[in-house]
Image 1: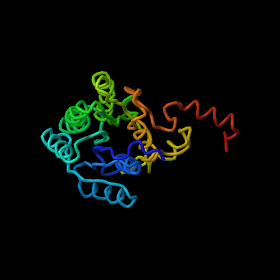
Image 2: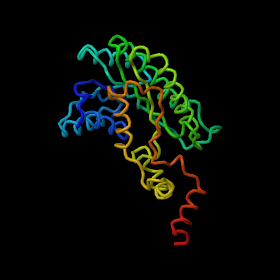
Image 3: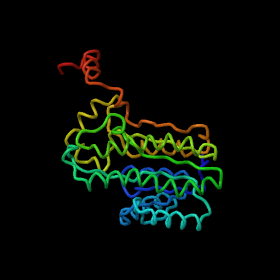
Image 4: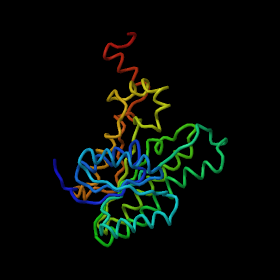
Length: 267
């Protein structure tokens, strides 16, 4: 394994479960010192235990990304301890509903946008200053396919994920001169606690409509994130990578034509 990430320090928000946990595990396996950050420290400790079981290194920090003071204090604590923050993975997220837009309470709309947009802003604001001093950094933001085509009854989530794409592009322009790359991943249907109910209802349909014929796993997203975190990707910035098994390429007519061409129609 190429250990170009060995010894680097990463702050991963929302690292206590699902995609975030997968990212933490993958980075740790590559020799990164992983700071697992989230509001649920019990689950963060579970992530830490899994990392240590795999002979990796992790620390747990209680972090509410919507609280600017909390973010500042955590980032400064990490910086004082290690003298560096090489990687920021802004992954913390939440959702509500399902609720149509006109039925969404104001407080739920605010909660989702604050977690995704203000959360990313707060973390980037604190980490970018440290990275600029070092003239090096890797920032990866978790968006979603919902940020491309919307999501029925999840408008706050779709709006937030779309906004993170705009933030990614803007940060790539602003921070590039300082040697900092900024990229985003857009996961498709990934098997996580957040999607458990939807997968129970629609998992087989989604699998059949995905060219790779399976539901994504957190490791699939983690692989893309680790790619963006590599020092070797210094000329790759402002990129939004879909990690969806080709789902976005497929239309219902494609599924029908595939069945005709392969002889599966009517079986």
